[in-house]
Amino acid sequence: MTNVVVVAEARGGIVKRPTHEAIGAALGLTAKAGGQVIVLLPGSGLANASAELAGSGAHRVVALDAPALANYSGDGYARAILEVLPELDASVVLMPHTAMGKDLMPRIAARLGAGMVSDAVDLHYEGGRFGATKPVYAGKATLRAMAKGKPFVATLRPNNFEAAPGGGSAAVEERKPSFGPDALRAVVTEVVAAAGDRVPLQEARVIVAGGRGLKGPEHFHLIEDLAKAFGPGRAAVGASRAVVDAGWRPHAEQVGQTGKVVSPTLYIACGISGAIQHLAGMRTSRTIVAINKDPDAPIFKVADYGIVGDVFEVLPALTAAVAEAVKQ
Amino acid sequence: MNIIVCVKRVPATDSKIKIAPSGVAIDPTGVEYVLNPYDEFAVEEALKLKEAAGAGSVTVVTLGSSEAQKMLRDVLAMGADKAVLLRDGGVAHDGYSTAECLAAWIKTQPFDAIFTGKQAVDSDNSQLGPRLAALLDLPCVSEIVKLTVEGRTFIAERDIEGAREVVRGSLPAVLTAQKGLNQPRYANLKGIMAAKKKPLEEIDAAAIAPATEVASLSLPPERPPGRILGEGAAAVGKLIEVLRNEAKVL
Image 1 (cartoon, rainbow over the protein chains, first blue to last red):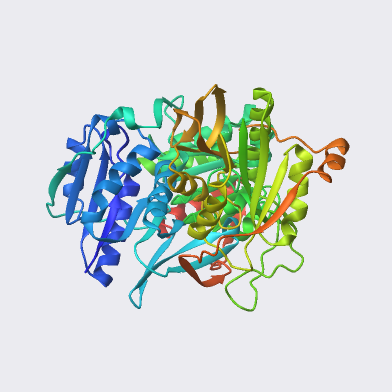
Image 2 (cartoon, rainbow over the protein chains, first blue to last red; image 1 turned 90 degrees about the vertical axis):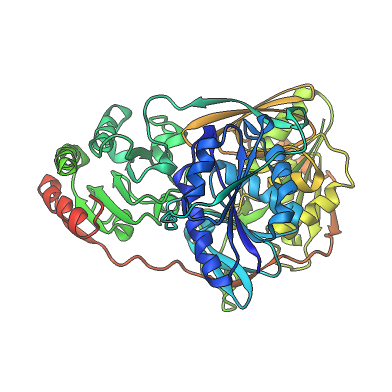
């Protein structure tokens, strides 16, 4: 029997939800394939994060806690993880498909000589082999790939797998890397938080996105107001490529093939026509709402619910209605 | 400053995708193939770095078939000095074998930096940069939106969730490009003419098999058809109701 290892992400000592989703996915695999779910947690100052993960439902937690790992370093984190991995007998290694996961896991896979699927939306175990399903061609097609050997590595699209319900009380084991901070070759020296209290797009449960239908940057407050109406920390503001290219909104808000791929519970597209490249970035959202003046806009083909109308008329009314609904 | 840029020939982003009868690949009929958009930023950054250093060369390499020659000439026209086509012999490489094949060739070359785009827009894997770095024992910074190089030291900026990360390291390194890193130049007529005389070498890639197998390639599951609830502000009440009672998101 071999194990499923989940590499946890705990920036600033805080475990984000996608790590719990990865643990949930891992438990789904071990239920079929046998073995244990082992969480591997690299970083520094990990007491709280370790305690949280001990109750996540995983069977074991291994904390790699050292000053050398205080800031993310692809080469450093990979080296520390690879020192411990052989003793964990992993047939699968998982991590969320975050900025860290998508950078770190390929390093691990390369050293292990392993096949890897990035941004997986489903995991498989068939005939003794592991595999995954993922969107390709910007979501225009779906690929199902099976690993020929072991281990198999995958990063998992956030907000796509059920988080582990939690429970149990795994022992937290500690390991130290064999090297110090001087051995790191590329290291994060500074993290500058984005201005304001904006919810990061990839973490938001709700995204309100605006397009050219807003007619100008001065009208984007309509989008921001609707996002705020959902309550603090719930909704993020997104933008179509057209408005980012026009300089109305920052690139960090762009949803789409050359922006961010998001998968929120609710996506509200306002004044966005629905170009293929935009759909690539949001088509796996659980519920899609579209508001557009043009009843033939392609966005209505992917939307679950649509309102044909002028965003200047609909958005204020919707904002008031959401604020009211959220109170109840 | 010798720089290697790894590029890929991919379907244009507005292509309509059809599945081939084999069920494991796309039907290439009618598809326009282009230089991977993210690799354009990588090429531009390599050219800028070489120009700033005042000396050196930019070599562009791809793993593919002879059909990739036109793309390589286009990159030579932008200003690269030399192109190399590693013939894949028709093998459908995955992230593992692509990196192994490129690394096997790169190891035979002198270089100060390796650039590539953050991901290919067909496989959407974003594995190549970090895999190459691990195989070549180099540092890697991926999805860079800003890069400063002074001597052997680099400072790279990248966007992470809700923040901007600043990374410091030293060359040689693997650096992957994100949109916004620069404004890729267009090849001018002079560049296009010069490209015809620049070296384009074709060699067989190392014989390395992929580590994964495509079980199937299919069109995405159709979302169940949606419905228009109404027009204008009058439809808002209905929307709140369905979001609460049907979609259960409120």
